[in-house]
Length: 191
Image 1 (cartoon, rainbow, N blue to C red):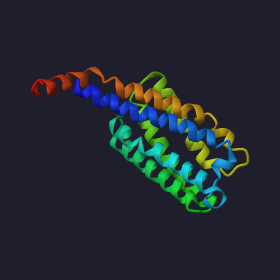
Image 2 (cartoon, one colour):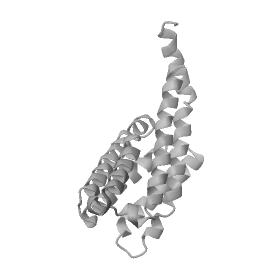
Image 3 (tube, helix red, strand yellow):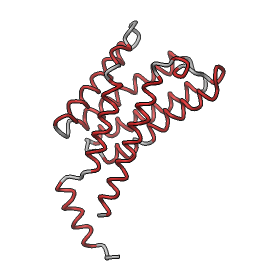
Image 4 (cartoon, one colour):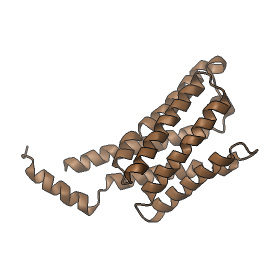
């Protein structure tokens, strides 16, 4: 019972992240928001950075929970740190070529985590996760090509959908986890 409540709480983090990523990805089509700086519109720049940092902060407990190899989790944590750093770099006026280059490098780590976590499960979870990972990697290597942003368009759908699927996986523990939890709950005093 306690374990299931904890799992459900963790799924709230991933659903929140999915919503924030969806909102943030839409802002990429609005240059006045996407490219806002403190000198052009400080409130928009601050809110955009806050959105970018918040969506990544929500994923820390998700990476810890989702089944993946240790090296995949390490890549996921690395991606979160790099992406949050690039959000702050943008806010503080770093040139676009500097913070975006670092962000695209971090996306390689994101792809590694997504693919390694996706490979642990089957069906739509695996397919969407791997497609998202491949899309990120390809875009990271061709982001300098004119109109290359078109390559990243599927990610506007893949990432939020994959995160919703992650939430479903986290909220529903498998039989082995339920059995282990049953053993642990039998040691707890009844309240």
